[in-house]
Length: 137
Image (tube, rainbow, N blue to C red; front, side, top):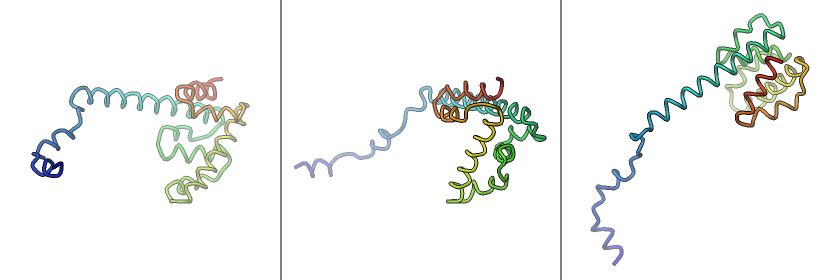
């Protein structure tokens, strides 16, 4: 009996029911999210720019450009900047990321800060405070 009910059902309403309701404010939420993302990027780039200037890097402006910011982080952390290319190669990127973390630890040590503070960068909103601390104190 249940099988007959399924066969006689009008299935043309199913795509309508599966539609999302993004028309009711979804565009505004996307815009707010985009603005927060851009603000976070600008803040982090400015902090890294300031850090690289403190360390005496000649191309501190690399902090503003997405791929070059990895290049200068490797360089400032006394690692080979060519690991930036390794970030785009599968499996090699794991090793390259380890070297990037090691470079960031070296940068924090050069600033005279405790490298364990890097672990706090994974905590939302606290990461902005830690980056500000690295750059401006």
